[in-house]
Length: 591
Image (cartoon, rainbow, N blue to C red):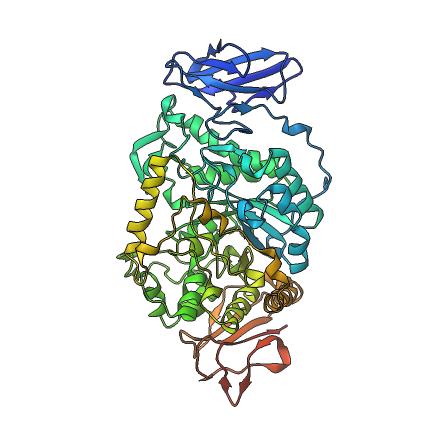
């Protein structure tokens, strides 16, 4: 095929089906109530068949030479999960209401990460729609959905997806996701989606049976790498690039978060990531579309800016370093990588001022150098947080920071990251002090479930203080159910107080901080900073200055830097006689 086309194409006369299966000489198409029909073999491993007289709603599967029936890898919907029939869906037929929506500038973004299955009791796209007004009142301007690509079983985090074009049927139909996006846009909120292009899940991935999906040349934490750079790799590259474009164009999403891009191996002249970003931005046209990466290597090259300061390809990276430094200060935990941050006297200040703590220096935990310089990057090239799905869910019990820390400590952490010039991201329920755990959960076949249970025990047994005899079973329905938010707690006095506190912080952010961000420079660590004494200034292009002074420790400290009362936009705690009270935070703006 000259023009690569994934998924069924609806026309006035019927539907044309395509499958790239270069490992097979013949493929049959099976409609739900009909006998299988042979598909026509084309060049380059493609198989095609046009069926007259059918349209949206038709159910179909492909039949391999051994009789195995498999779903369309580009299926738009799987009404009976990943092993069942695929459904033809006419996405162009959706009636959009917020037709003039063009998105929001990145500087205005306040992200809110949520998992559709546990965000509400119902766990659906439409139920999430009913909570958008709450988020709008809070001051959130963008929701970020954990992966929704079809995954096996009744529940899961979404990172074991196998059909990247099909929203998981447990969450609702594709039209329901469109309705959620449309409703968010009507409220002035962007919608981002977490997508996974570094691996496929192990249950329901039939691609290797008929296409050269993997290669021995590259290794990942999940085994052999996806072949993005071999002699026959073009269809697989197109499969994921067109998927990214599909979400942005067909569902009108405002951005994507690309999971673990450090595990995407590609020796092509133009790396898959660069081609994907280039083509997604071209497809978006005049819309504000933002691309975020998760990158364990902290490779700042992906975040390079053009001469006018705009992102060339990727807009920002999740900045784990802000989480690690603030978490180490709040909890006193020093195991694993936390020790590398707690033993660096400027770690908190550096993570806030410069993004990465390690910018090419040796990191003892990894046993090697980590990261690259961020000297050319603005603060908005980083997304900061004190909680996210990984940092909560990869703890043995999936416990949130609020479960073990006093409210005043969590408020101080929130006051730091929500008003800092990096783009903040809340995790669902954080704004009202939700205590529900968010443990890892999945629902694979029994053999894989046992492997997950065993692997989880082995992984967590290496961490101090975790009794593996009491670990949650990640495959049990009860583990999934315990992660669901209890929205009734929002109206409890202490929780409502936290919600009011978060709302006030975001109001200050939108009024005082956002107008400065387009012209804000990299932060400067002020003399006198230490691990818990934070003094950082961010200059602006017009000569202004944003200042943070904080004591993130349990004892009063003498500060060598003054808190400027005349320019203070927020204060938590007290400052007198040159001393900052414990867990105090002061922000000031001098224009």
